[in-house]
Length: 168
Image 1 (cartoon, helix red, strand yellow):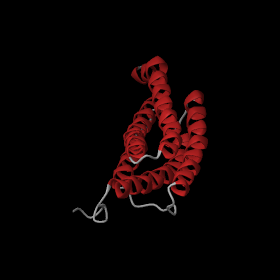
Image 2: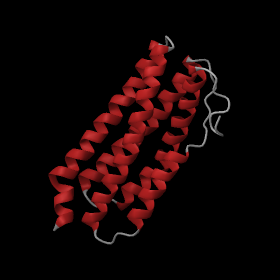
Image 3: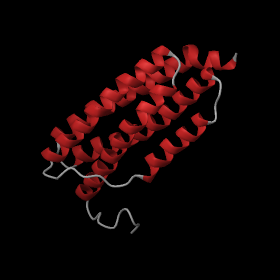
């Protein structure tokens, strides 16, 4: 087995591993969002990132609740995937001088994060259901729904104005 999966022997182990992975990811995202807020120039985009920061803080609290419901102490494991996604977004946005292009890049970086979260939460919801943990699945589904909604809002902002302004 790989370095990150050596202790995974059951679906329950995989579920807990996934919780620890996304717990780390959400905490990293709460650190990255203030930087994105400061770089955004579009007021609506800035407000959207501020809203998502508050939501992300709520996601951390929900994960802690799921850990508790499942009888596991909340803990995190390094998630190289989210680290890479956040690092790439930070690198790209540090090289852009035009504010409209910056906003387009920030949306793309945010959507990469959202897509990662959507895949993780989708798996966690499915595994929780399979484990007979409908209670955990319901809490995780709330977050999954919010992540999907954020992705839709980012797409709408990009398509309705941000990308158009970046072209000019």
